[in-house]
Length: 408
Image (tube, rainbow, N blue to C red; front, side, top):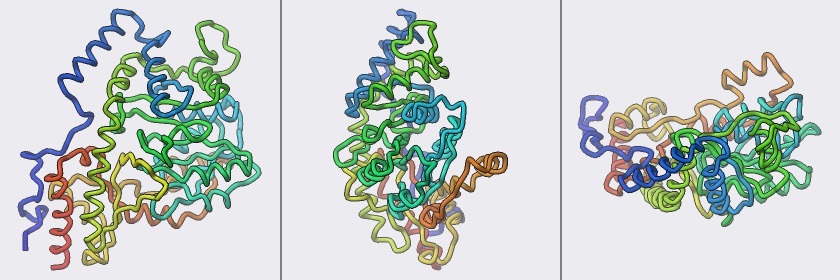
């Protein structure tokens, strides 16, 4: 039996000779294309307003998504803030009611709601997809509920038809958190194009990135008008006067980011397909290992973005060794991994701080599915899914090696 790398053995995957793909992907031809765009922005002296490249990218991304309106912002968090305020026609200066958020997500989903005056009600997720549970959603609605925020977590679409039906029944707005789901498809519709508004992040780890940045997409002219005003100091489009008819923020990004995004958008679908091929390969290989359970993709998913590749770890199949020991062993074998979100958002220190100071802004429903996802998950990054099959094969090989050693 091979000795584990963390015990002095030879790792299955040698990162020195066969490094995993880095991110973002770079190439000389792409750099030349970036340079042309940077030069255009630089010599036109339009690094900010009136944002011609930003509007150009917004049109390209809206065409890609299938929406009619969109605008760039400085982050995904700020995109969520703008969308929440715009769909409810509020300015965030007073209490706005409740926003329902799944309890398995990045803290920004909740933080954005708090920042524009919403209380957050955390609800459970589906046991497999880890997306917002429609059953838990409907049971959690109160007279104070105004907005539902489904999160397309890790690149997997939430069940939008059922969520929209519930929203229509209760006359609620829907803001999609698509910050991890660039290119994902729900019944042949792009995530971020289905609700009243959809929000994206272009932070450095995202599948479409400019280092930082965000985007609000909508097919509602009124929502767009309000979101534009909120991101541009209160000025509705075109926004080139000093007339500010409402409160707003300054969330306008640099034009250089738009250059990066417009060029990288051209590569998104090809990268997404490559990740899907890799995920299908890993699913087939890992399903044969007792105690490792790849997440099942719902039947309504027509394209998974695979921002992260999740699997579940069952300690009893690995000699009772805890997840932390398994991830340590897997990392030593040259397979980068993490346990992902190990705590419910409602258990985060920031949530507890908000709850202590403003108890009316936090409500928590029972979340047994989310608790289990937190306890069992292991993540691989999206960049690993861009590797060739020779490298991908090292992942199940390393898992099998660890399982044998843990049972010895």
